[in-house]
Length: 422
Image (cartoon, rainbow, N blue to C red; front, top):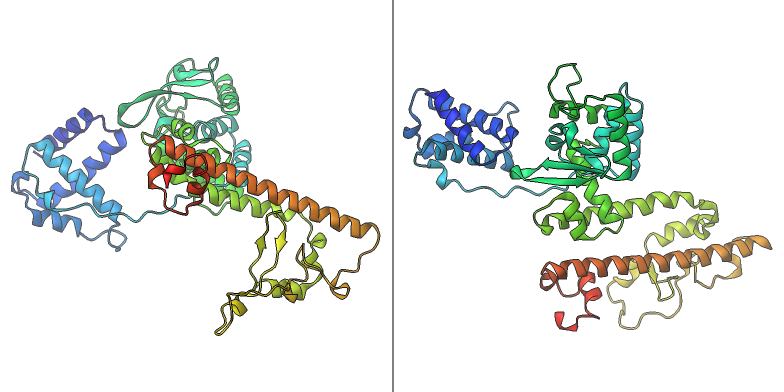
């Protein structure tokens, strides 16, 4: 009886075009529930049985997460539906799982992972798998499901990749991914069958688990603390694309997202990546050329102040937050004199006593550095404005412009061409 029930569940899931991993997971959950029932028939299952199943002790001793509980409820619903029985799970609502930002490797970490793969015993295999996960944005089950005859190097694409819900679509290959896949095929000219066979020498396909172990090994070799996974490389695909100025519709097409709203979740991650990149590249500027570095006391004083940027892209000064927020302070008439703690800011008129001891060419060098920094700030501001305008256009194309909050920078960028959007 148990085997018949599980077979009926599997046939039901296959008819729904469920993925093999989904089928095996639902079978496992259904088997555990049948064990809880003992010898009782499935028709006798009551809501109390479902409640006891969801509240059962776990191996870790911790209560199940909302996502795990929801998965078990959905699996039991499929079980009762496949058996044609009354569904006792109807009274159990799905809990809202806490949304967490995915773990995404940054550009430097991606380079380190690829370099670690080049040092593998079979570098061509590892590099081809990484390139397809990252540059082509494949899911790990799509990767291990590829056949050799799906690779069209002449067109630089993968033909008929099976995605979610049984959909099939051609996936473009970037030049680097195409080159690495071509190198793998040149070293292993199998002619047909799985693109990646089992590393143990068997005739079967590489497993999902083997790709996961590869990423664990590579990140440890590269000294990366982040728990980078195969799907984390797919997250990096979207983050890198958006961060490099690719439009939301184009990124959604690359990721094969059914809804552009899914792709929008990566916008915040891309902003974080850009800020991280800006912080990292700042280390290339020697601290010895920074005006504040020659006055350590000034550095400590400025930490408590609010820096602003004027219309020319230069720094201007503001009084300390402690003074602005002090009881009895008059904020309606801000002081017109510059605060002395900002003696090291780029535009401040510094008394001779507080200026660094520079003469001749050094003074000219500092003036050149100030001008370069001012130009850089203007370019950054222009790039941010352009990105916000592009995002606003993408949102408007997909009917989301009306949902922008008043005062949102993206809305401000949208308003000059579309005043009626207010």
